[in-house]
Picture 1 (cartoon, rainbow, N blue to C red):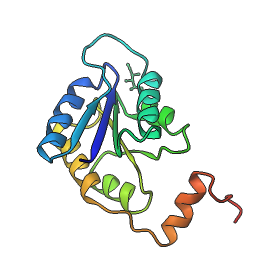
Picture 2 (picture 1 turned 60 degrees about the vertical axis):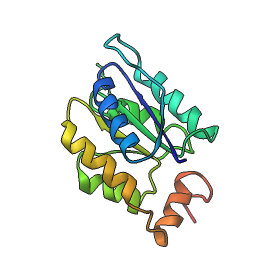
Picture 3 (picture 1 turned 135 degrees about the vertical axis):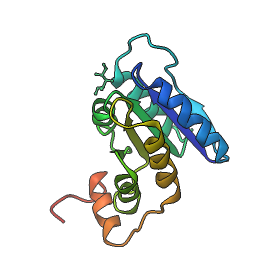
Length: 149
Ligand code: RB5
């Protein structure tokens, strides 16, 4: 079964719970890396946990949520194997997959409502990578080829 891992800070855990339900309804296996309360945590620690989970092959997809999605996506993208896309609507979620082959969807719980967030996750999971010229660019992101090539 395809596994999707979720992690959030205190600002994002309620939206995370909602999206985990959606993922389960879609037949995915959900890995909850926390948090599950309003107690304050640091978003880089949550991004780190998710990056490690994907590196270990324990999940195919990731969802990261903080207040704006900004901090947690910056932290996640410090890892070469992560392509975290901060999405705000169906269009950004679609292109994140089509052109960037994003493996992590990042969302802001304070900036994106639950209905739009659900649409983002559905679109993210339903959209394949287009490949072609985008595959060359994505390879450069992970250092497989140098940007000058
Ligand atoms: C936490 O208050 C907030 O700074 C965090 O959730 C996030 O928005 C950072 O980018």
